[in-house]
Amino acid sequence: MGTDRRTVQEPSREASVGDGNITELHVALVAPLIPQNTGAIGRLCVALGAYLHLIEPLGFRLTDRRLKRAGLDYWPHLRIMRHATWEEFLRSVHPSDLFFFSVRGHRSLFECRFMPGSVLVFGNEVEGLPQSLWSRYDERTVRIPMPGQGSRSLNLAMAVAVAAYEAHRQLTVQGSSCHAEPFGASPEQSPP
Image 1 (spheres, one colour):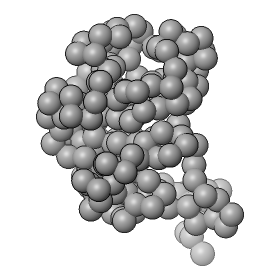
Image 2 (cartoon, helix red, strand yellow):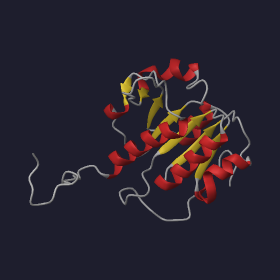
Image 3 (cartoon, one colour):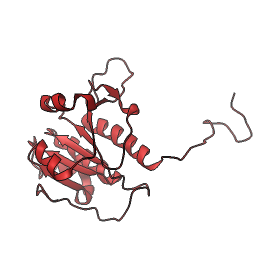
């Protein structure tokens, strides 16, 4: 796995936007702390063909066995970059559209419109987004709806999965439609 801050490890398969595999999506984790979450997020990024950006400081080493275990054998296929600071990330990636996820976000995930090159930004598992990013990007904050009672937040890997798959859905199914029969209905039956 490449650990050079400026090196992107390319996946072993070829794909392009619109074929259901690569969505030109970026996930950025700011100061992640739990290696298992980052490993699972890396695996998710491989599944979507998305880039993973790790913005230091990291709460673990990239050689951590828990990171490798959660990422399984997907890790060598991950397009990953490390960045020493947020400013270095901005200089090297030149993001076209940034979405900052937090339980205190101003708009719902489902109000967002993602474009190729969008970056989904997440803070760490304990503190969330750093105050410096809140101050700078307050109007770009997004929340994942949690209508159930008694929940404060989602696990970081789960939150990234929800957001990334919504972005993927928007990027790959624009203009398509799905006309499924209600569960359990036969084609001859009409819905009640």
